[in-house]
Image 1 (spheres, rainbow, N blue to C red):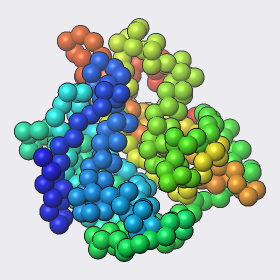
Image 2 (cartoon, rainbow, N blue to C red; image 1 turned 180 degrees about the vertical axis):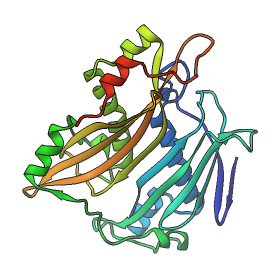
Image 3 (cartoon, one colour; image 1 turned 60 degrees about the vertical axis):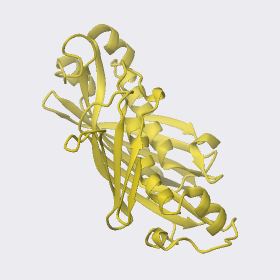
Length: 296
């Protein structure tokens, strides 16, 4: 079912099996994918899907920011209803709820969209009027860091470099928003392993698994295919033995400068994964708090 009005799109969506990594719960990464799908469905139902815009109008549609609250667990077999509607400043409001339930919210938040002319494509028709508010001509420009600033940030954070391969990119050259969502999932996993809290160990020894209740991923400037993305992660706060707040930042070296290309925030807790209390939040004990303690 897809219902479209000038200001709202309501569509059926399903989680992918790939996202069910612990038991049959869906991880935050795939929930962010579903939020993106909800916004893309609005564009497609307004005759403005990414393929049509690109090949007919020479425009590249992408997500630049997603800020989401994850209110309840989602199971791989859940039937979901996605509600997406434009608000302002190129933003969309998105909500996921179970099919058949009006009041229960699984995910809510805002996504920001941009539609950028691609000089490599010769347009053959103007874009639909519904797209006009999302067209921008100025490129994103992230902050520049000096070598001293970069070395200082890197020395106080967990550092993980990775190369932007073609499967991280869109429109043949730029790193897409979802690549940073994947990077956020991986850098947290690597950070936890580095701190002695590897997910496999915590699952086997304590039946605990990290769960995410709030997440934001924002592009600051385009990174390009085959650039090295220097990714840092720090825990900024441990909240009352219940959760930890972390920040990811991504940089590239370009033109003798360090360019800040993306940033993210994530609020992690731990859930019990087995037994009658499965799905309930767990307390962070002393060992975990000491391992997660923000670096000075």
